[in-house]
Image 1 (cartoon, rainbow, N blue to C red):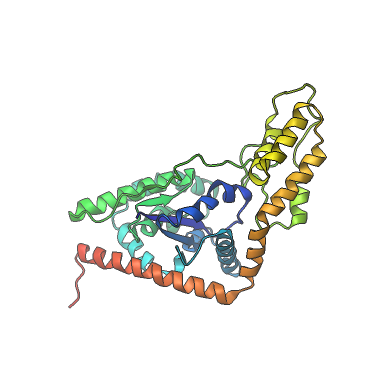
Image 2: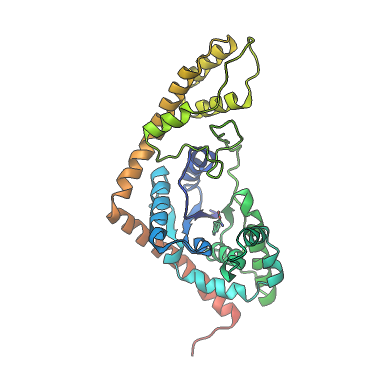
Length: 329
Ligand code: TRP
């Protein structure tokens, strides 16, 4: 069984694209792997979040992942700052991480350019902290988005370097976890490519039915097709793509036929789409409400998650310290 790690940003809400694009697969993969999911709250400190919102952000993310189907009885789900071992490994790895390579990282250069007043050491060593997250459990595979591939590459470099310097074969060189199948890409409602937080075209899992209706109603359309069997423009195809995910094949076939015969009424299509999105996300929405009101449950989940994660982390650190020459009297 592979150890698979997934690091979750501690800001932002989950949207349909996150859910159908990846998360739904996570909930399956947890049965086939030894999975660790953790919320990267230390990483969020590079941008100096207000202390009054830090905890709320972590709670939101934790609640939504649990509601979407990550099972704490099956996987280990924990909060990064509950596992202090990661700080020690971060310190040790930093001794073999060089200014030249850290400052050349694309994400560092980009953030330094955008916020020239806040080029802090945490930002510079973001990749070492991420490597520590991964190597802490000696993960075989890591679930990362495209924008994180360079960080994973650096993790492999740090692992290899550690093994070389100390003449051991201790750390694995972790690879990206792919779901082994085509991932569904959920498009946005604005006719653009994919659904994304920064694009502002999202339906969030925690949106109320009213909000969902409003968002779908505002989706881009036109006067309708002029010729039978014409090719759908992207923004219409996008609505059908979402419909295919949340509706039945019969419903999709019905609207396809209407389109082909130039009889489509976008009002009807949108009404159906909103209704089916609401239906599909309803169980998650109600679990979100249940979980966010249940601090006892959240306390239990995070406590047990931290215990499991610390056990795995302590095992790694014991060996790392020994390899590096630390001894007790
Ligand atoms: N940097 C990742 C992101 O922004 C989050 C993250 C932190 C992470 N540590 C990780 C992801 C370890 C995978 C493994 O999305």
